[in-house]
Length: 104
Image 1 (cartoon, rainbow, N blue to C red):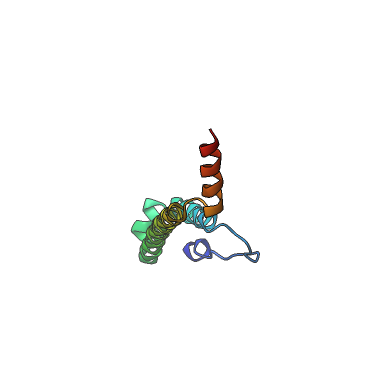
Image 2: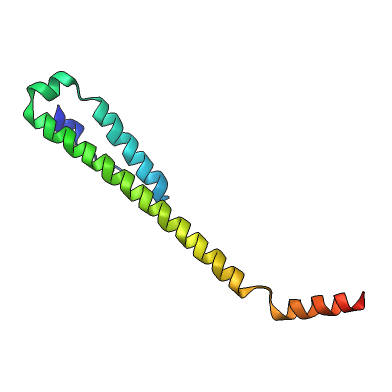
């Protein structure tokens, strides 16, 4: 039973998939697989314990990956906003604004 549970194959080709959604989908599948284990199975079958531990480890790595990806996206957005702030307004727009303000 455990070997059947661990067969997490992708049936369709993955193209243009949002990485966050993909990680969440895999995490949900791993979590649902973990729910299939029973206490009796873990107590009676030593190989089930190693499979369970492997799935818990995979779930932890997925969570870590998602957190690191979110931190990267946040730092990237922050860096982009700093770059935009450094650039400021285009010089020709600034000149037109000065001209219009001087007319008042």
